[in-house]
Image (cartoon, rainbow, N blue to C red; front, side, top):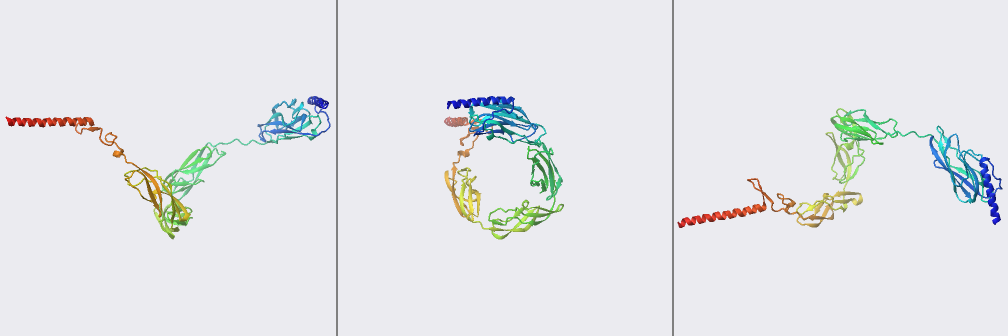
Length: 483
């Protein structure tokens, strides 16, 4: 066994010397007998697409199966399209010739060693720069020139090379950012119902993102849709503004709507929704109204811009709806069906958060909400507790109270806490915060302020003087009688 190992190492050494010689004399490698074993040489690029002037790096490695005792390999490339600008080798390369060797014009390397490779091993890297004005493949081709296994048997025929396909394409144009926007209107004066087109010119004209959004400063005067169509509603002036999607640049143009007189109304299309429950709000979506103006003539507008007049609490198969706009009223414009709404369940959503104080005539229901289920789930309405009839409140009692809310014949209970009323109403009397006696009293004659103690002392003093005066008068009268 020792003799066989020594023999193998001597053969590997001889093969290594041959590899060194092959760097100077291409193609010289031992012509050993083909043997079992294989290896794959891989060239992996960090990019698959590059542009003229760009660069990419290729890492070369070998994966033995099961061993590699020596190798001679090269990474070929298209010299007309890319140029080698940098390279580095690992300890697993003895002779490294970046500009060609071993009969190759590519990046060449070879190696032999006493300890064979038994796992994937990094060999060398090469960085390329793409030449100007070229496109197509970079032409990467990994070649296993001569390979031997640990026993120095030639396994070249069993070896292969793989390389990443790197495609060279034209560089995309440089981005063109938005720098501003301007707005123009094809008509700046309109009568109600008429329309104009707003146009936004994004700067520069070849900006990558020409998108804008539209808004009106006063939708009661004029509206604008997503395409910049401006529709006059009522007399006044509104600013139509475009805002760029990129950068948020804005520009505006003013439209003036002149007053016009509505002469007549007619229904061009009834609203889409026909069926309602008692208490629902009417929905005019889809409805169209033909408005006849004195100046503008016939103009079709969305019915939602007009007022609908109808009692939504009545029940009927054909409840008439009147439409009012511009001082004109169209009776029986269309009919709707209103179905009876029966509250089948009521639940508390949130108890009131408002403060209630002893003496308040009504409880503060602020923040309180309830949920009413209509017709066993046909509709659910969330309503303020103030819409219900409240019972159980005692304005003279402080502390927690349980109240009852009744709505649509259903009742729920909720709790509130009634606070004690502050003494004296919680105010001050001439600066005194105890709500009782003023701390200072102003003399209505002299305008001077006296403390309460001074006032009390003054009262005792004047009372004493009055007693002395009265006593003196009595003494004086008694003496006269005696005389």
